[in-house]
Image (tube, rainbow, N blue to C red; front, side, top):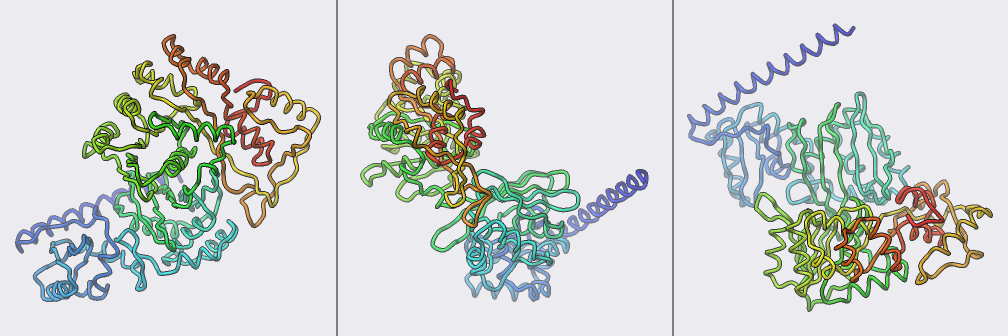
Length: 564
C-alpha cells in the first residue's frame, strides 16, 4: 500500500509539472501574439481578480468576445482578451466608454481567461460595495445577523448548507461572527475537512466542521474579497475588506498562511463598537481611575501601556484619547496598522517601504505642531528617545511597550539604551493590563465561601495598600460561571481589564542609576501603593465581576499572602 501511494503521489506531481509546462508554453505564445498585435501582455494567474471589474461585462458577453475585465481603478478598466482587435472586443470597449470607463487593453492566454471566468460565480446582481472593489448581496448579512443570538444558532445555520457553490455561506459565517461579537474567524483545514472557529471574549469556540468543498469555496470567496492572489497557496498573504453594517463600517483583516492540508485563514473583525469604551468602562477601580485622570490632566509627559498582544492596550489608549479630546487641541497618531478610525483626530500608518517608520514618522509628526501624540508601539531606541524628548518638550505622548508587567517597563527601556535621566522625567504613568471574561449576571452561580477561603481573603485584604477601599468580608458574595444561557457564552459575557499602575517619582530615577531590575522596580512600586494585576483581579472576583479561574489564566496561580 505504501508503494502504491508513493507511485500515485509521484504521478500526481508529474501531471502537475506537465500541466505547468503546457501553461508556460501557452503563455509564451500569448506573449508572441501580444507582440505581433502591438498590445501589452498580461498573465492573470498572479493577478487578484476584482469582482466589481468582472461585473462590468456579463459572463455570456465576456465568453463570446473571449475577454475578461479584471481590474478596476477609478475609471480605468484592465481588459484582457485573446485578440483586442476583434470586433466583439471593440464592441465591449465602446460600451464601457459610454458608461464612463476607459479600457486598457491587454493580450492574455485562454487559460488566463478561464481563471477569470471562474470568478463569475461570485458576481451577484443585487449588490453593495465592499472596499469599492467587490460585492455581496444587499441585506444578506443584516438579515442573517437578526436571526442569530447564540453560537448554537450560527452552528445550526452553517450545518444546513449542503451546496458549496452558494455564495451565501460566507455571508452566514460573517453575519454570525458579527451577531455574537466574535473578534476573529478561524478556518483551519485538515486532511478530510476544515474546522471553523470563532474567538469570542478571547476564547476559541468550535462553530462547525465543513467539508473540503465548502472550505475551498470559502477560501476563494475570502481571497477575492480581500484582494489576494487566488493561485498563490504556498506563501503567506495579508489583505482586507470593509463592509457596511447599518450606519457603520466594519473592517475585516485577512491573513492566510500555508499549512499541511491547505491554507489556514484568520479574519480579524474590527468592529468600531468594540472600542467605544469610555474611561469609566475600562474596569479601573475608582482609586486607580483617579490616578489615571490626574495623569491625563497633565499638559505634558508620557503614559506607557504594557501587555501582550490582545490585552486591550489599543482600547485603553483610544479611551484616553477620547477623554482628553477637545476641538482646541491637535491629536496625531502613528499606528501599525490603523485598526479603528476616530473622528476628529489625524491618524497615520507606518509604511516601511516608503521610509515611514515609527521613528521617522514621529519626527515628521513633531513638525506638525501636535499637542497629543499616540505612538502605536515603542520597538527601538530611536523611537523611544524621540517619544521621550517629545514628552519633555511640552507634548502629551501615549504609547505601548511589550512587557509582562508594569515593573518591566523601566528595565526594558534601559536595555534599549535609553538614559535614566531622560526616562524618569519623561514618564508620568506606567500601566500594565490583561483582559478577563466577565460573569453573566443571568446565570452565574454562588461560589461557596469556605472558612479556609474566608481566611485567605482576609489575609489578602490586609496586605493591600492603605489607599484601597476594602470590601466588608462578611458582606462579599463570590460567584462562579454557570453553564450558559441565551444571553452569554458558557457563563461569561464580554471582558474587562485588570490593571496595575504606578506613578513615576524621583525614587525610580535613583533606582535606575543603581541598576533597576524588574524585581527592584516592582518592590518600589508596591511600596508606593501599587496594586498588582492579580490583586486587582481578586478584588474583581470579590465584587462578583469575574472568577478565580479567569484571574489565574491571566496572572498565574493566585497567592493570597504575598504580592505576585
